[in-house]
Length: 292
Image (cartoon, rainbow, N blue to C red; front, top):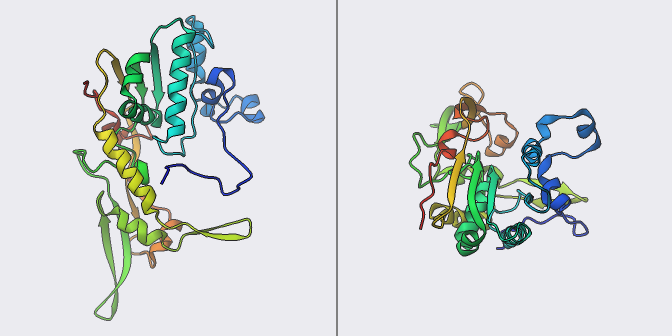
């Protein structure tokens, strides 16, 4: 198991553009003509921050660099770790041997955490400050590497609920089953056991992948024990006062799920917690990472 996501088409490859010293890839999430023409600011990523830093005197290729990455990949694959190491070295040397102030956003903070875990000495050599924004340190309830941290003391653990039609004593009835952090894999297995996609006139089975889950579990353990090297300042910025989906429920007492696979095609109901609209504040509000 390598942790790499591969394209179904062997003749194609997904690459992250390195234009403009890496800044092009992190400027906007959509660089298409119409997005630029209509100035759709929702697609901006680091766009305004880049312009602000330039106004403050930072210079592209000397004191300002970007590091874009394919966020669909695992946060700790060698390609991403090697790429960040190279970028830190380039920035350090281009600025005349001055240590870097590193800014990460969202899962970029998890990537940096993995880098610290694997290359603490390199991080200590090249980084002065680490500022992270809206990083889901305890994850945003999702799947694989984004599964909620089972070792974190949640105020209330996130759950998945499913209203199911069941047969009891020869009669149909409805039962609400709840899956917590430790049991949710059972639901994923059941729901995805017949999951398939059609590609290039071929049917490809995509059940819950236990190899990926095992890899993700190792990633989670790595993140739980990250220690920031001494002498590096750490700043954590996160948002509040916006609803963030947290618990999810499929089906209802009057309209239960007949088959687990139907979950894939059922629009759920959510309960919400406080956050920035995407990341729960509870997940993002880690006040500090222990120093060595």
